[in-house]
Image (cartoon, rainbow, N blue to C red; front, top):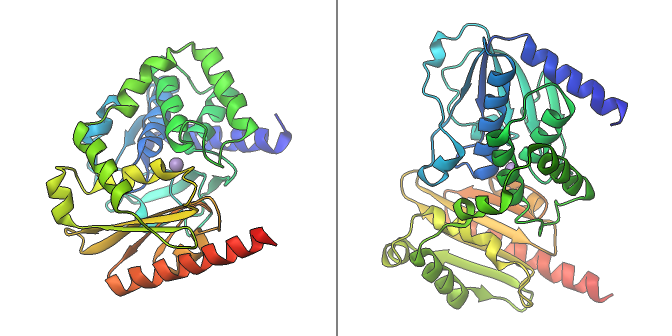
Amino acid sequence: MITIKRDLFKQIVKIIKNYDEIVIARHIGPDPDAIASQIALRDSIKATFPHKKVYAVGAGVYKFRYLGNLDKVDLKELKNALLIVLDVPNFIRVDGIEDLAYKAILKIDHHPAEDIIGTVDWTDEGKSSTCEMISELLLDTKLVLDTKIAENLYLGIVFDSDRFLLQNTSLETFNTVYRLLNQSRINFVSLYDNLYDRSINEEKFHAYLTNNLEISDNGMGFIHVTNDILEKYKVENSAVSNQVNNFFFINELICWMFVVYDEKNEIFKVNIRSRGPIINEIASKYNGGGHKYASGARLKKYQDVEKLHQELDRACAAYLKEQSN
Ligand SMILES: [Mn+2]
């Protein structure tokens, strides 16, 4: 381990040691990486320092309940808390900390940095997942790593890297996964039942997306899923974002955006993936952001959805032109 990393890990353990009240938060609309990293780190800190009060906060998601329970706590009661922020770079997307007056922030994240700057800050865009980072931290410090913690971390890495298919997968990812599996000896194959469990309705909905995706000459895919369609296929709004990673490796498709209207928040939720042009810089102009090749946006007006679509299509055209040169 290089010295810079060792110093960083020392600082991380030190700030955790310094606080007896710790609140661990992550992004709204959480995925398995967000929830698994949060629960794994909570369980590890509690196992290492039994006297500490450690809470994993934010709204729970029923389908990820196998990862473990989140905590219900009156944050107003906490007077001297450390806030640990995982898997999210901006305050606006942190779930469940409105009532918390924290004293310091420890941030661990693999998204490009935005407005959250940790008192101790480990931001690394090169990592596949926050769970990969937490795995390294637990493997290389005295923080406890038990079976359940290792299972959660493995699931987060597998989910965010999409089974090591995505660009964010590195040699270090495999090295960390090897060390995680070697040390914990978990039965990782049996974990896929939970992660990939889905209904036939979701599978039929996937077929609907395939059949109705519009693809431009530039390889730009677009679909706006209306609420009628969600009702017809008896799937939740979140089924749209859950499907977006299933469209990689299609010959005619280099970038694609899925749009769905969130009635509760009166907003169009846009999910974008690319295996051509970099998209997060474009998404950031439309109230969005994320990773270079996996981004999203939230838009009030459908007009802006159309503008974003056009801009991405132009980026695809430019990408294709560059490739042919
Ligand atoms: Mn993540």
